[in-house]
Image (cartoon, rainbow, N blue to C red; front, side, top):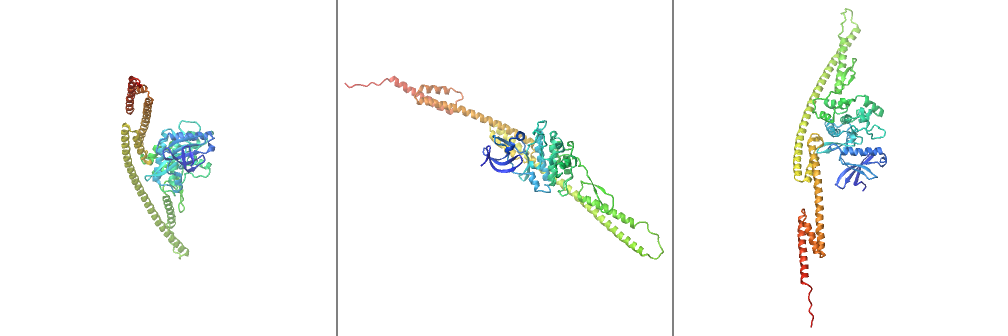
Length: 548
C-alpha cells in the first residue's frame, strides 16, 4: 500500500493541474483524511511551493465548521503534501451539473448563508479567499440538512500584505466568478470581492447557469466590467422579489453598492433586515399584436404578464382602428337607386363590427386572465411569506434548543475541568461542537467560541497533568533504582553499605509509600545481617581438641 508520509493512501479523489487529492487513512488516530499532493514538477518552482505552503498556513489558522481544516503538512524531500480533514461530500459544481435549472430558492439561500458564515470568519481575521466558486464548496448531507464547507485558500489574500505570491503578479482565480475590481487590480481587492463571487455562485444555484456565459475570455471580461447582469432566465424557477433585489445588490459593479460584509449579506437572505435596496429596473420594448406604439415594461415582471399587456395594447389598437372606420361620419342619405358597391360596403362594415366585438370580447378575457394571474401571484407571495415565517420560527426553536445543549455542555465540562478531569472535559466539548449543524453555526457562534476556549483550557490542563505524571514516574523510578542498588549491596554481604543506603533513602521527604515499606524491610534485614556478623566475631574461632 502506497503511503505519503505516515498516511496510507486509500483511493484517488481527484486530479488537478497542480496536484492530486487522495483519500487516505491516518493510522495514528484511525481516521480518514484528504491528502493534497503537489505534482513533482511543481516542487521545483519556488513560487508555487511558497503559494502551497502559504495555503496550508492560512487554512490552518481558521477554525470554523464551514471551513475544511488543515491538520498536517508533509515535507519529506520527495513529497510536498497538505493533509486536511476528510469531508464525505461532493463539490457544489458537481451538484449543479446535475441540476440544469438550479437548486431552488430555499436550498440556494441556505447554502449561501453557510458559505457567508465561513467567509465572515475568514474576513474577520484579515483573509480574503479570492477564488469562491462551486468547485471550492463541498456539500454533504447531515441529519437531513445540506451542509457546506469552503476549501482551497490557495490564492487567499492577507489584507494589508502586499507581498507577491507569483513572480509576474498575474491574475489568479476563476474569471467567471471574479469581481470587476479583481480583474482590474488583483492586489486591491477586499472582502467585498468575495461577496461578488458568492453572488455569482448564488445566481448559478438559482438558475443553473452563469450570468455571463460568454465563450471567449475577452468577451467575458468585457461583460463583467461593463454589462449589467441579466435577470434570472425564464427557464429558472421563480424567486421572490426580495431575493432578486439581494442578488442584484451582490452583483453590483461598484463594491460600495454591495453588502458591506458577509454578515449583512446573510442577514438579508434570512430576512433579518428591514429592507434591501430595490433591484435596478431594466426596460424592454414589447411589440403589440397590431399597429401601435411600443410600451415600456419592467423586466422584473413575469413573462406572462408582459405578453398579456402587449396583447391588450394590440387588441385595443385593433378595436380603436375598427371603430374609427365603422363609426366615422355617416354618408348623407341618398335617393338614388341602390348601388351594389354600397351593399358591399355595408357588408364590409358589418364584418368590421363583428371583428370589433370579437376583439372587445377577447380583450375582456385577457383582462380577466391578467387579474387572475395577479391574484394568484399575490396568494403565492402570501403563502411564501407564511412559509418563511414558519421556517424562521422552526429555526428559532432549533437555535434555542441547541444553545441550551451547548450551555449544559459548557457547565459540565467546566465542572470536570475544575475536578481535575481534563480528558472527560475534552470529550464533552468535542461531542458538543461536533453536534452543531453547519446551517446553525452562525446562530450559536458565541456559545461555540466559549466551548472552544474551554477545549483549549482542557488541553492545556491535560498537557500539564501528563507532564506532572511523567515527572512523578521519573522520581519513582529513581527511588526504586536506589532500593535495588541497596538490595544488591545486601546480597553481596555489604550490610553496612546497605544499611547506610537505606537510611539515606528514608530521609527523603517525598519517598513513595511502597518504596518506603521496601526500604524499611531491607534496613531490618541489613541490621540483622550486621548482628549475625557481630555475634560470630565475638564467639571467636572454634577450638579443636586433640586426642592424647
